[in-house]
Amino acid sequence: MQDLQAPLCLKTNAIISSNSSILSDWIKVKFPEKMTKRPTKKQLRQQLNQDIEDFLVQGGAVHEFQRGESGLINGKLDDRRTGFEQPRQERTPLEAEMQAVDARKKPVKPSSEKKPHRPRKKVIYDDFGEPVREVWLD
Image 1 (cartoon, one colour):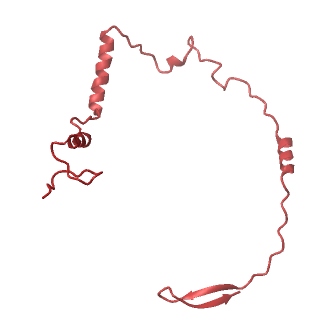
Image 2: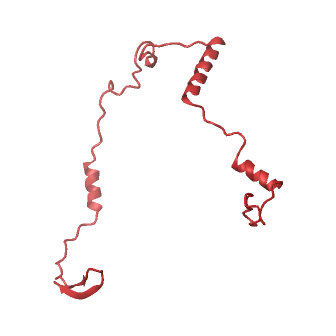
Image 3: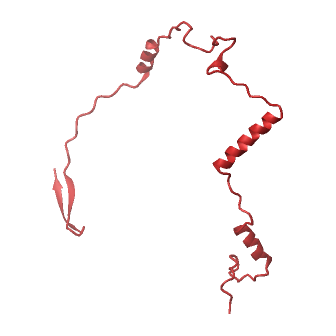
């Protein structure tokens, strides 16, 4: 009689013996020995603080700036980067180009006369969804 606790080989549907290398490979794939865990926020914060401390101990320095000070050049704002101090540029008029584009479009044909409505067939169904009769509607 077959041992029902042993896993089946998917390719041959045969029972795999417990001393088989296939079984050990299958177990290693399905159940790795050590699961890798993601660090928690607390661990990340501790690591970052430790990195900062190591940097400062090795002689590194942190320079603090006043708010907005780092964007200044020699104590002044960079005039080339602000668009509000420059004079307003003239816009190119596009009305003539727009009229030329509109003139190239195909003219809209007036709608033709409406055709008279043809009678339409409507099917009447009973409560069970079966067709009962057909009625012609105008």
